[in-house]
Image 1 (cartoon, rainbow, N blue to C red):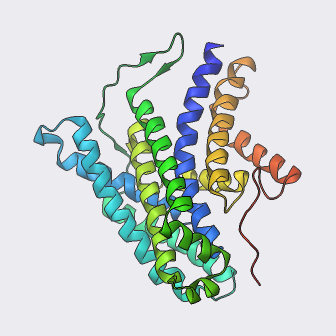
Image 2: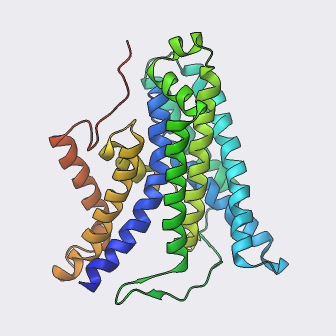
Length: 307
């Protein structure tokens, strides 16, 4: 049972990071029906910027928690500016184009950001410094680190804040109105371009936080690190119901649990036949199963169809 509960903890941590990135996917899709496949690279840029700031300030004698806050602030600023420019330059001119055009553009933007990151930071993996105490906390068998506690706590606070923002503020009402019908919303005084840009900015901030969490938890960064988390987060958004905030949260956490339990718990039971190298299989099998039984995702899509 200790193995099972340990994998549950690991799955919750992994799922929390998936959920943060999945929220960026689902918010953008809910507003303009666009899958931003460059979103995983925003996570990568956040992690690389965090690594750069931490490396530069490593000899300043600052405590680890302060270095992490500085790295977080810097990565959020860079990622939000990056996503704002991506939306303005790459996606806005194609807003009324056939859906295939923005999709291809998103894939091209993903490759472009990867290439630029490789040029700026070089292709070799880089170790991310340990900023918080590494001594594990014993939970009576399973253990959890301070970094993992911070990931779980931060994710809960961020998700609660985002739900409040979307459901109980003027900006949230404007976002929901734009998602329902941007033309009618503009007649009511809402500025759709501003709302769409704001949505991209919020999604980028969440990806930047997830990038720092990913780097701190796994201890390494490189220019290709955003591809698989981005793909998994998109899977989580579809699993929960693309366009649905609660669905993105549920899908992210569920996907993390499926991966961790499938790889870590079933591995010993099968003598290593099903181990960590098969974690991706469990995640995508779950997606296929859910979409077969419920194509709209676990919580369904709440975005109205547009003519």
